[in-house]
Image 1: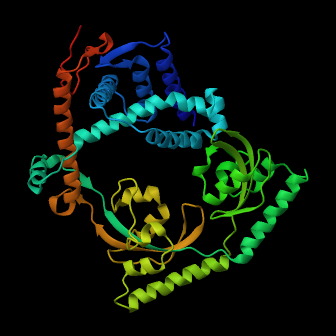
Image 2: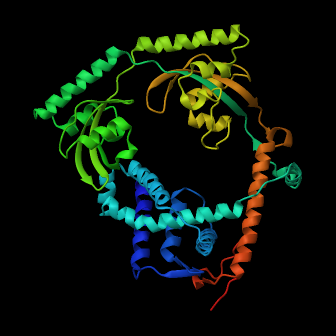
Image 3: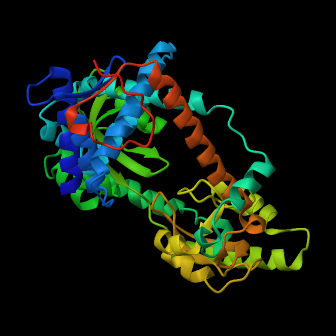
Length: 452
């Protein structure tokens, strides 16, 4: 956390310095009409160090060249009249602020840390985010149309020295059927009655809202903050929660509200334009242990059906019975969100989900697991069956087993070559000046430096 806060402070301070032109900063480069500030280089270096990546004497020069590349893209995007909509900027702004707030604890803590309101922080981030989106759009424009033929992939592979071919760990493709126990009406009623009791105690002055939230709320993120969700746009909440907030006056305590997460009471503490400062208490009904056993037994029955009825394969069963909306329409197949592909490196899977990795470690291709207890992303309990759709042994990369992996590597190389050619072509036509601090750097690309 300390490292993250340090990086946040440097990033936010850099934005202010760049906008105010503070005298402790200085220009260390020019690319077209875009300037490179010393603070930009220092911020990049600090982030690089904090990431744990190894540093060398070339690191500062490499980061400086990367900034030059970003500035050249930005300069060219403006020449090409590429435009960014305010909705794109706002969407990216909200995504980043949500991440910062989740890391630092709350919106209020971020405001206190920076000594500015969220609206002021957003105003200072605006142009930075706009420029970053322009850079991405310009890079996408350059990359458009890059495709590879099978012969190009084959040639790329042939040119890799034999002793440089990478070793590939065992990989698996997985599918699942998830049964999530239904919450009984009795458990729902228990949670609702309990929350209504808390509400009466708060209104009567017998208990404080923040104390009840800290002790009993089922939302761990806000419970630690006395139920505070900070300032948020109502579009970020589920409809039932947002509708209830709109109807409340500042300081009013809501009736009990039901959403997909359970039962809430909320209080609107303040409003700032379209943003609401809200605190809430959530009670999520608990799953009865008996219902968990029923879910496990249901999966046993599904396994028997798959074994007994040839026409009912695992994919069809997932579509018919699984409670996981993300995978059921795809035959239950899981996606590795680290790569976007369907394969999981067994070594990485052990870090992502130790229970799953241990369960399938000795399973063969085509095997279906026994029901496994699991926790879903929303924190609820469930059981699932997992099938090994495919499994590869550890091996040296080859065209038969790893064509798609090799194709992606070849595409990256082709993209790098196209970018290098683009930089060389555009640099000749662009005014570029490098500060003496970086004049001895050995850059990877040909920048055709023009000195005044």
